[in-house]
Image (cartoon, rainbow, N blue to C red; front, side, top):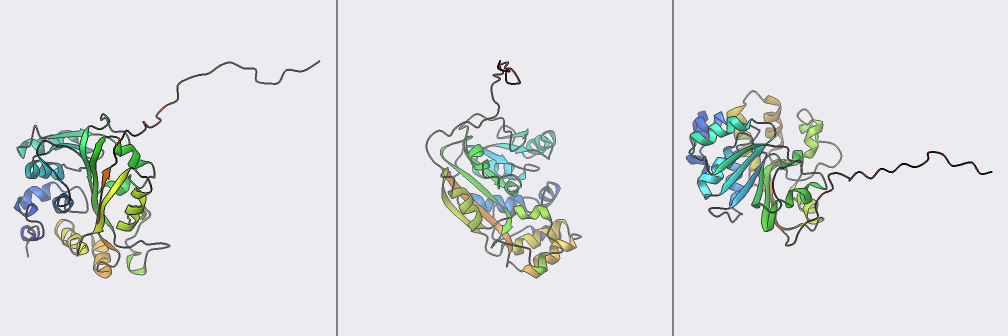
Length: 271
């Protein structure tokens, strides 16, 4: 099977319409962003004109896909990839006016409170979203009742103490950010910020993970070997969707007003 045929999947009919050359030119990570976005969108009520934050969008393929397929307006936000490059890609796709590229840190977002109808993140959220405080920060930018939704590489079940022997050659310290649907459910539910809609793993997700790597980085032998040895026991694609509770969230503390007053350093001697 050649590279072009590998990107055609009956499981993802919307994504399969896109030219493989365009998809491969926009590679920005270890997963096919169109497959994951289509999977996530299946459980979202996306309607034309909605404002959507695409957080950690990479080269904006997911953002363009969301706009073209669902008619939503998308703020394509990323820290690592160049916003000007993404703008050229957006223009070439005929999506200018519907997709707006920004360069921003996920922990320092330049948006007004409750600006978005939904916030999504494709294969990037574990790099910043495992922080116990992050969901409350992100939720501020989403309207009451709006969705916060993530999808990407993860674990089917948690690795508790140390990685199993068949994953040790591939496993690095940064991979401890990968978690299971159950972990994400507990991580979000304990905050009482969102009502969990679902948290699950993709059926045969490890096979789609493997197919993507066979296509875009066949020289990545260590990861490919790990996926083949694991066969979905631990590795797969996961998604979590929550609906933001009604009400206004407290503003985060970003600075303390100055209030210095001069006082003696040492106690005064008593006579």
